Length: 335
Ligand code: ADP
Ligand code: TRP
Image (cartoon, rainbow, N blue to C red; front, side):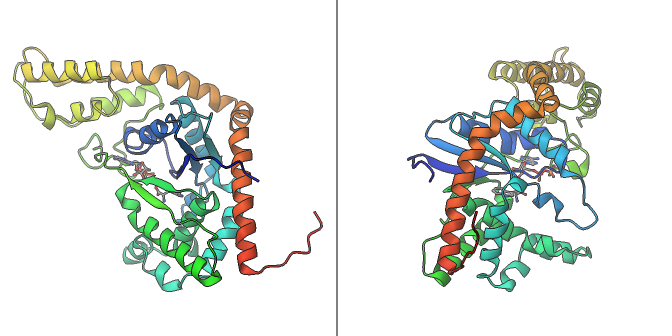
């Protein structure tokens, strides 16, 4: 049995499909880490590696990327004392509950999902995995009986579906097996990439957190600017360098860049880029060392995650047992 606490159970995840960038940091990672540092919450960060397998033709080896994501959260200060970091594929209960949810929800609901319809509309051959994606995500949430799910607004439909599926299951089995989750929409602004479009690995316009220094330098050098000269006053709100800088820089550093840009007077975009790189190194440099340490010591990471894993295993077993009972399944297992 799991220990009952009055903490608010929060669960979130980001797919391990590429190198972590500043957009992920400001839109998803930083808010989750802050939630983990509030002792009133119990945060479960789930790395959804199974979700990373849903695009046909894009089967990749998610193991290494998952390890990168988990090491990133650890290096950036995710608090493990009350919370947990888990890998989706370590919890087979998620697949089991996903099946139970699928068997009480209509196929039409899944066929209406945006991601599935978009894939069909763009002429891609959608996998059954993509169709099943929302069921798996709903199961991620209900298997650990999470109350609150912090996500970007792009995940609204997935959260609606999760609530619908929970209601259908509970109604069909006349039980209160699964908890209906609530989304916590994060209203962090979308961070733009170095070319001015949304920062996204699909556009190759990202600035990474812990990538090779040379690549960061190259990306920062390529941040789009207007052609204002060295001595002209520049509007920080319209300056992409400043906008990106604000996603990680200290208050003091932001104030300094803002003042210098407004003044102009010998402070050009080249100087702003130099300040950017210096602050990036100050904020992420030490954390990069820790990140690399974790990357190279997976057994240490395993030990760090152990308590959280045990707790989550209890939650998952408890919920799955309830679901089996609600469905009237029988067992002949002797172990
Ligand atoms: P990508 O667009 O690079 O594939 P993902 O979709 O994997 O990134 O992003 C995972 C999470 O990171 C998103 O759910 C969102 O919360 C956050 N995120 C990604 N890009 C941005 C961005 N440009 N601005 C703010 N948040 C972002
Ligand atoms: N679908 C989410 C995304 O693309 C990732 C995700 C998978 C997730 N399982 C989750 C988010 C559970 C929150 C809770 O960003």
